[in-house]
Image (cartoon, rainbow, N blue to C red; front, side, top):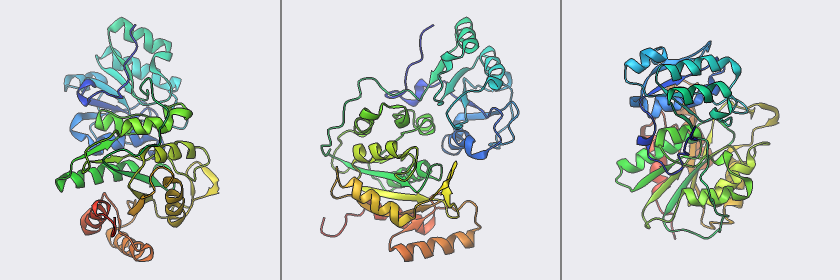
Amino acid sequence: MSTPSALSDTHVGALPQPYLLFLGDTTVPGYAKTAYGVRDWAGDLCVGEWACGATVSTGLPVLTPREAKERGAKGLVIGVANAGGFIPDSWVDALVEALHAGLDIISGMHMRLAEIPRLAAAAELLGRRLIDVRTPPRNIPIASGRKRAGKRLLTVGTDCALGKKYTALALARAFAVRGVAVDFRATGQTGILIAGSGIPMDATIADFSAGAAEMLSPAAHAEHWDVIEGQGSLFHPAYAGVSLALLHGSQPDVFVVCHQPGRTHVLGHPEFVLPTIEQVIELTIQLGQRTNPAIRCAGISLNTGHLDADAAQELLTRTATQLGMPAADPMRGGESFDRLAQAALDEPAGA
């Protein structure tokens, strides 16, 4: 059986679309972030959802693989990003059923689909594809640290899973609306499924991770922007290495700090207190200046989905006043987000 190709330099048309989103037996909404992200940013590519005991839902029509195939689906996307990125035995029957229904399987997990004997055998028998998008390209160079032409924005965070991808996508869209030449650069499995290309930073070898970030965002014309999806946090006890490599290799001119108000401790690591936004700004500038001395913070992105509109607006206004820079929720949009997008684009005085 031929092995699936990586998507690092592949266009979205190479993926079998439309998608049926698979939620497995997930009970934690945060673990279904891949399904939610694809629904929110590539909803026109989704025909429905399917599960085998999950208590979370994307709100899309519930379809069996056979029903989804009849509605035009070509690929089943594993919409789960659990701790460790593994595929449990309890999912295998459901995945084999999808193959028999005529769907290819697309996964962003660390575990490779072809490593599961029943899946590999079924895919070979049926002529179906097993596609792992969490596969970095070959021949990644060691980072040079040299400044590249073009402009770059990186989203950074106080923690994982609080809006770095959504913020980057929203800013890229806002730049395009303003007539700016822009590309969204995906660095995780969900972003790759949405954009159709990218490099899964957490799957690269550590010594080459900064080089992968340089490769992801190559030299461009002077007015072109790359908006780069951030990963992890510089303060994360497990993932800070990925965040630092991305910062050094991206060489961002601008960064936006993402935070979820009310979160006090690192997700999954309750013994570690979350850093403040001010601490993230200070450390990002200190470390980012190594490869781009002109790095600056454009503003703050707050995930206020748990607040009502009035409380969210009060918090955004208060945060902007306290920090002296725009604060916005990209999913709410409005004037505050317009100010954030414009602050990212505006050249600082004296530049």
